[in-house]
Structure formats: C-alpha cells, structure tokens
Image (tube, rainbow, N blue to C red; front, side, top):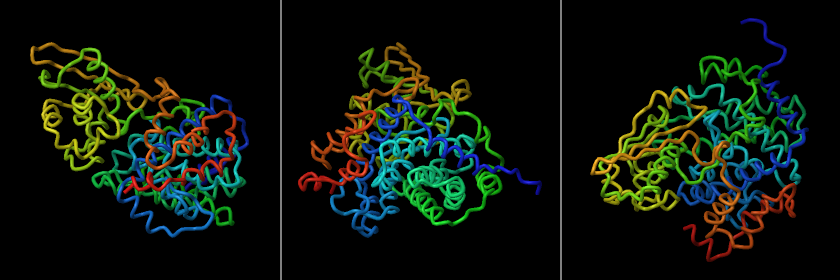
Amino acid sequence: MGERPENSMSDFLARLVLEIGAGALSEDDIRCVRQHVLDGLASAFIGCRSETFKALEKLCPTAKGGVAGPGSGDHARSLQDGAMLWAYAINASVFEDGSREGACHPAAAVIPVVISLSRNASWDDIDRAVVAGYDVMVRMARGGNPEFTSRGFHPTSIVAPFGAAASAAVLSGLDHTRTRNSLCIASMSSAGLMSAFRGAEAQPLQVAWAVRSGLTAALLAGEGLEGYRYILEEGFYPAYLGRAPDPPLEQGLQYHYAIRGSYLKPYPGCRHLHPAIDAFGQVWDEKGLDPDNVEKIGVRTYRIAVETEIHDLRSRGDAYFNIPYALAARAVLGKNDYDAFGEENLTNDKILSLMGRIRVTVDPEIDARYPGERGAEVEITTRNKVKHAAAVSHPMGEPENPLPLSATREKFHSLARGFLGERTMERIERILHVPEPEQSPGDLFRSLGENINDQYEGRE
C-alpha cells in the first residue's frame, strides 16, 4: 500500500461540515431549507400510515422528554429511535425530496436527525445542519452515480449514515476530529440493496436503520470514540464501487449547496416516473383526450427509469414504480395524488386496459443526458391515427422548474390532516417564516406529536 495522504476523504468532509456550520446562509438559502424541511414533514404523514411503521413504533420503548413521532401524542421515543421512526416515515412515503446528482433522498436521513436534536438548537443551527447533511450525503452518492444502483446497492441507504452524522455533528457542536470520527464510524453501518424494493413496505427499514446508526455514530464520536481515518478510500468506495469516487468528493456541486440542487415532488411515486407524468399531462390536458379513444402510448426515457420499474402490481408501493400505471391513473382518475396510487385502483378495468396500450423504452439520447437531466418523451396515438407528443427535460420540482411554496403548504395540510388539528398545522407551517419562526425549533417540532382523539383514530 502506498503512502497515505495527510488529508483523508473524511478530513475533507469534516472541514466541509465545519465550514457550513460556521458560515452564514442567505435568505434564499434559508427559504430553500425550510421548504425542504416542511416537505419532509408532510411526507412523513404518508409513511406513518403503513403497518410496518406501526409495528416498528411498537418495538420502540417510550422515553420521557424524547422525540415525538408523526402524530404520536405523548408517546415519545429516544433520540435514536425517534430518528429511526421519522426516517422510515419519510422514506416510506415515496413523496420526499431527492438529488439527481446523487440519486438519493437526503430528507429521509437529515430531517429526522434535526428533529431529534432540536431541543436546544436555534433556527440558525437547524438551517446549517440541514445544509451540511445534504452536502455530505449528495457528494458521497454523486461519486458512484449511477454505478451504485447498477451494482445493486441502494444509494440512499448506503450514504444515509453520513448525512445523519454530518447534521448531528453540527447540532452537537463537534470539532474537526470528532466530526471526522462521526463520519468514519458512520461508514460501518452503510447497507442497502435495490432488490429490497421488491418488498416495498420493508425497504424503508434499510434507510431507517442507517439513520439511527448515523446519529449514534455522531453521539459516540462526541464521547471520544475514534474511527479509522482512511475508511472511505480504503473501505467504503472499494467495497461499494470498486474504485475511487468520480467525480471526487471535493469537486464542486452543480449548485453552491446540495440542497439548492435538490428537487421536490408535486406527487408521490419514484422520481423516475415524474418526467413521463409531466409530459403525458401536457398532452392530455391540452387535447382533452378520452382513454377509450387511445390506441397506444409510447414513452421514451432513460435506462434507470426502465430498469427500476416494478411490473407485478400487488400494492401501492409497486404502483409507485410503474410508469404505465401512473399514466393510466392520470388519464382515468384525472390525478396522480396519494389516493390515485391506492390498492383499490390496481384492479380498475379502465386503468388496466389503458396500461396494456402503453410501452416504455429507453431512448439513447435521453439516457446520455442522465443524471444531469431526467427526461421523457410521450407520444399518444388515437384510434383515428392522430398523434400528440410532448417532451420534458426537467419535471416539476427540479431547481430549473421549481415547486411553489404554496404547493408545499398545501401538501403539508393535505397529508397531515387527520393526524394534526388545523391550529397545529398552521403553527408548524410557520417553519417557512424567514429568518425565524416565532417558536423555537424544539417547541415547534414537539407540535408534530400533537393530535386530537378523533383525528388520531384515523391512523388505524
């Protein structure tokens, strides 16, 4: 083995975390952070409806003064268990934000840690912790995008411990050495497989466990535990990628901060569906077409979107990864919201009939622009042989095609309703106030556990 460099990959990331932790954010940066935080909270109120979430919640003992889960009332959990539950809920929604540079979902790793450690934090602390977590996570995932996926690894799961540890390091005020140790210790809990998506409800567990471990890594580093300084270049990347990251960690991101280059979803489902949904919607709305008058629909998109598709639709989670279903639901039901992906629609004869007339293929030109662009072209042929087509390079919610703040507010209210009272939702929505909401982060995030009995029963 050759002589090791004085500065390891973990040293670079630790310096990055400390620079962000000590730096000043613009009002535009803060507004972006807060929109992503509210979006992540909204998404959790989908994920917490699953039976797996409820089973996981039952296994976590209550802890006085701990972390409140989504609409959990007085049933607070420890810092680590609370973060794990929030991570599961956010990732299970398939409605959280993501990074096309890293092909990962930072909110599922970062926001749970921010909630867990918010008790004594200021809003400035929160904002900088979110930015640092996104930057570390996206840089690490970017170096293996799209090879991590093609090698069978789930990018979000394998880099989530690092994002969680970075955010925790900022909120814990760790110095360079302890921040570096947090990241090195976190690497030992990286794990996640793309094949886990075949068991949709179980899959988010790999993200939840990764986040719990990443937070624990930072807490242990804060107590003085050391990690192996060169574990990223000698262990993580050789194991998961078979080479050094490319581009290297220190290369600049497309935007100044990773969160500024991350997207928000206007509707649930794998992001790979969204370019096709948007292109299809453009034609469908403009032409006022009828499903019965459609002869065929052709979708051309990038390879990963085709390869990650789930063809056997048995559950909502399967539908989230099926382009023909998403387009047929849009045509027949007129929407692609949470309800449109419900199991009751998977046997809808009109949807199934239209799905049979949809063909999805890889377009080499669109694929060549991935991951910088996530594009799709849709061509609809009617029974009288008239063709209508549209193309999308950046689906709604990308930084080049941003989602309005009003859409995020509506998303939060529509998904949290049935768990939280209206006044509580209005209070939490004040996260969007820049530079600071009236309430402290600890007080405001504790509101997420509030519920009223008749609404709480709606979870069951």
